[in-house]
Length: 116
Image (cartoon, rainbow, N blue to C red; front, top):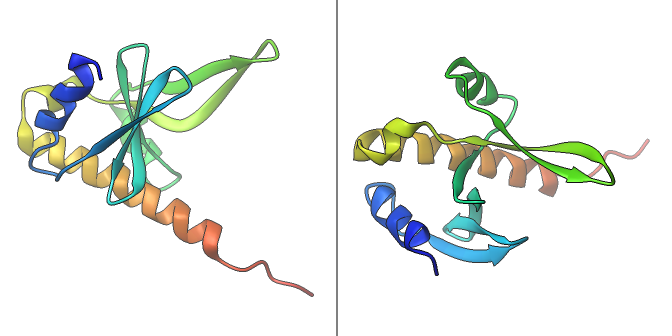
């Protein structure tokens, strides 16, 4: 595991114990079995959704993007604000925001489809 991934355990210490799993050449960061962040190319991205994306955009944070078949694909993750690396309380707040987005996404996936 990279030093950066190990360091993120310290960054999010006030949020709680996180686990990292390798994926797509990077890592997914999990709390309580739910992915709330990812690391790609040494950059930390936090989960966002329609309720929280504006908070990320207002700070000028970029969405995670990758190329697929020559087209840019955006996922619902945004770069983490630099302040979290120096402020454990802000790190906890941003991690909570990302985890809440992950919880909402899981709840939306588990709702049964309505049949007419």
